[in-house]
Image (tube, rainbow, N blue to C red; front, side, top):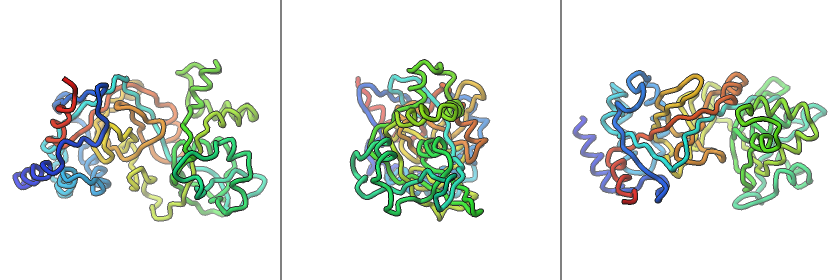
Length: 348
């Protein structure tokens, strides 16, 4: 069986060529490591990581990934599977590693507006597709969205709505006892600007003090200046209802499949192919060494050594994710021949 998979993999790689699925250039380096160079590799639950990999690998288009996905379906040893068919590749672009966290928020809302529920969660208007449209301030202050049936629901907290847009998906608990899940549908085309960095620039906080909880508290204490702070970020996210994902599963990631707490990460797809296994070594408080799967992206996730770890749904996950800002490194597991092909693209 192993020989058959290796033969198929070689045939598929001849078709795949040297495509890496990521960015390459003078500033990017690729280093192939051995598995014994991955800290605590032997201690991880490889079967849990393999189950997450199988969730999305069927959506990967290149022949070598498809072959490995087929091979992954009936593996008796997940650790042997990864070690046999992959090589760890350290991709670096000169920037230090940075891990942050994200989660699926839960908001309180209603299908009809009233004095409490007055902040709309919008669907994407047709004219906003395919280019730069109105800024956050213009959307919130103009009448362009109103009276068009674009509201999915109304929520009671503008700060929670802002963080829902940053996370890209969430659940809304309705006042009638029901709930709806919303997912990312698109954005207005404006660049993301960090309000945490803006508070640091203004001298309100030091960089190490800023977290989602700190920002939320500051905006609530300063309602007028707080709304202006939120509008410092001109990017605005629109949503769609997600009715086909069971409550027991996570929200949809960029691959349109449910993501898994502490096994799914958001990455920069210029460097890390969506669907690829990624070994992370997060430093700081609560070090984390484990095999993740790149199943999501984010507007703030830029760079070869940048990842956002998904922590789950609700307030507890949100508090943990909001505090995370640690260094470390991430190593992408690539199909063997693809890994060596990446070396030929490095200068010199």
